[in-house]
Image 1 (cartoon, helix red, strand yellow):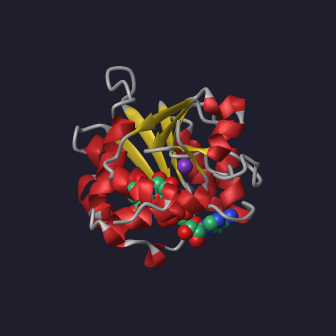
Image 2 (cartoon, protein in one colour):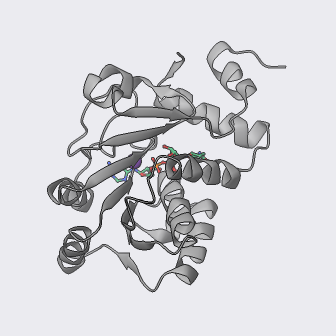
Length: 223
Ligand SMILES: NC(=O)C1=CN([C@@H]2O[C@H](COP(=O)(O)OP(=O)(O)OC[C@H]3O[C@@H](n4cnc5c(N)ncnc54)[C@H](O)[C@@H]3O)[C@@H](O)[C@H]2O)[C@@H](O)CC1
Ligand SMILES: [K+]
């Protein structure tokens, strides 16, 4: 099994997108479908999708859009400054805005209370706050959001990595989402592999990153 740390995974994503011209939007879409594949839609019908504004959040919004497309009930919570979000995030957000009545921006204590109340009614929570972009301790509103997600005691799926876990070292960078299932993209991350409790909850899904991108970054094979 190939193991990659945060820096290698970011380089592989970048190589695929910038050098091999794989559209980032298609990777995000594949990531969302990879997660959808692991959701039993006969069992779960009411979802809480909690997103940060990076591409982990874009994966989450694409999943929310695909659930909304199936007339599922989805509550979307956004943490962070949307102005700074990627094009993949913004495109998926526009579509989610058309498909659901309201999107919740979590900024104040009241917003956090509203989120907690709503999350206590859903059947399944999707954690799309941080993925490989997490590179410093989780503090402030992010830490509070993660503890709320853990406290409401619902089935939780983390996209790529449980938010709060260091993708390279497996260290907790503060609060970490206590995921029941982790759908990690393309390659196993060292941080997940190091931690038995996370490793056994992991499935690895191909999202269409060419092997050439992986070989180029890991083995320095470029032609
Ligand atoms: N690069 C790509 O285009 C792809 C990314 N994918 C998904 O996107 C993720 C990586 O996306 P990003 O690189 O945008 O990063 P993330 O979405 O993981 O993180 C978002 C941003 O949070 C900020 N951040 C880091 N630590 C923080 C902290 N402690 N408190 C507050 N903010 C913090 C960083 O500036 C980071 O860019 C992957 O894990 C994966 O889920 C793949 O699904 C598809 C392809
Ligand atoms: K995550």
